[in-house]
Length: 142
Image (tube, rainbow, N blue to C red; front, side):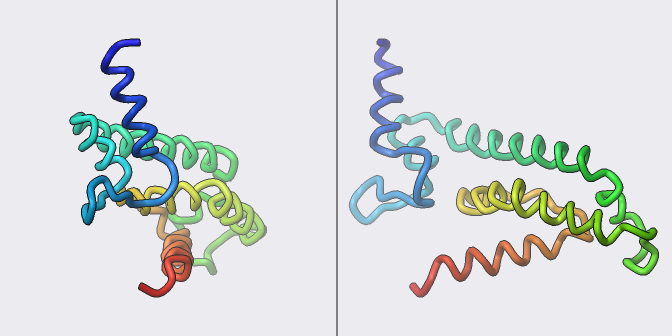
């Protein structure tokens, strides 16, 4: 095992990249998991790497949902719900369920990591508002 490998292993044990959103890396000093890991290892690219990885996962899941629900995804380009073709409400409900189950958990993790969320289409923007209200109630009182 190389010394860089053992440093990375030690850092991962001290500051695991999964779990709570912030860790105390020194007494009275806390930061995100990636920032603490980067501080410990001296590798500032770690935090950026985690951000990029989350964005890649998001893009991959979004493309998969788009492929499975193409008709409902296209509804964003229509002027309003009254212009939707017959049967669109059911398709839209299935799209919303897919986004809630597959994309929102990842978006919640991205929020924890303070990664800028890619915007959802305008007809799905309410889901981010839902996500915000859920995360606010889970945090509880200060």
